Image 1 (cartoon, one colour):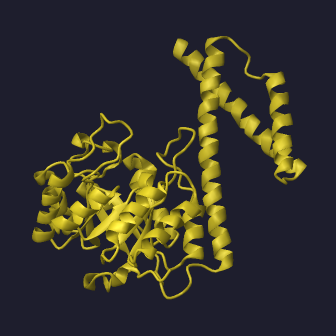
Image 2 (cartoon, helix red, strand yellow):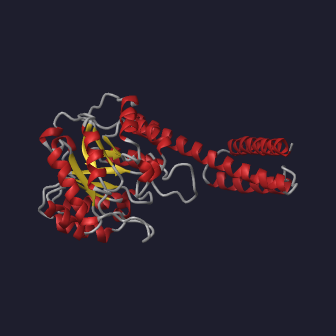
Image 3 (cartoon, rainbow, N blue to C red):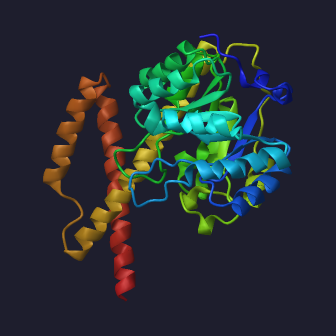
Length: 366
């Protein structure tokens, strides 16, 4: 795919090596939109203002955006600031209204829509012959082919200004982060298709502001092409995703603390060795996340045992763990001694965690 890199989309991007997109999860009012945009305009690195006009939500009782009327607020952003604007579109009607309004410079396709080839094709047909950049978020589940399929559909419709947004993947088990990064997926996309810029969305991976900075730095360390971060003038009053939105001041501080590596878009993304190292980093990160989740569950088990006066060590359960994990590990090609040592280390820490729970329980009773 002969995709045009974002730095050549607009004249004002010609000196841009890293793209910052920021703004509220949802456009909630003219005052909220303009307050945020005015604050973001003062941050030179921010080039694009984002705001949800149509919000695909799980529950119909959730705020689903103000729709077409909110496009008027984005037009004011274009008229009164230097910022470009971008909105999410999920169907042909959204695209048509966004284009007719003249208020939108860039479109983005959300994770739910990317996972539906019919919806993507519908959007592609409406955009046929239209010269506008489109950002495509990864689908909810880690299916690289499905993600690439969305690019192919738009590319075949004549859209050459394309970029990816990595926002993580839906976790089957509840964890600290809202979505699992699974860094190896965007790394593989970037390695196999270096012409596709990738913009990171730490807000949707984090789910809470506590982790946004850490994840944003990870994107820079992986030499991705930009960041999309949610910013709201008063997140406590946000109508959607309140916990993951930064204030303009917090966002400005986050940018000042980021460590920017020297970008080089003229070379291939990474050589093979670096690619493998990045994949290892990604997998190690996920292993640690899963171990943290496991210990959270272990502590809950310890609390339950303590409340019901059940012994911490259960021999029958331990034997089951050893047999089942050994079978699985051997089937996956792992060394027998390695599996045994790994299981023993985890089990030892699990016992320690349960003893701590019991000890704390005794202190509280006193």
